[in-house]
Image (cartoon, rainbow, N blue to C red):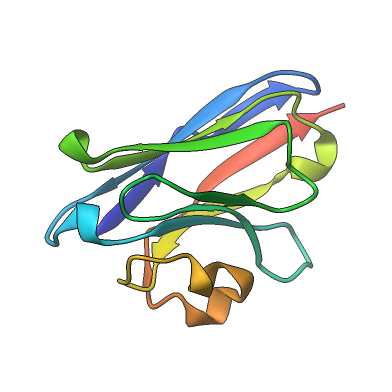
Length: 124
C-alpha cells in the first residue's frame, strides 16, 4: 500500500513537502514516481527516484524547483516543492511499477500500484 500526504493550500512562491509512505511490500526494491493530475488535464509524471536513490528524474516543468528523495529505513519518498506556481495545482500521486528503475515514469499507465492522491493548491 502506498499513501501520499502533505498537500495543502500555499501561495505562489511558497513550498510544500509531500511524503509517500509504503507498507506491505519491500519498499527499497522499487522505484517510486510522483505524478500529478490537474483538473481537465491528463495525468503526468513529475519526478521519479530509483530503488537505491542513486538516480532521479524530473519533468522539465519542475526542474530546479522540486527535489525527490527517499529514506528506505522509513519506507518513505519525499517530494520537496519550492517556488510553487499556480500551474502546479493538481492532485499529486505516488506510484510504482514494482521494479527498480524509473522506466514507467514516462507513461503513467505503466505504473501498476498507486497511492491515493493529495491535493496541492497554489494560489496566485
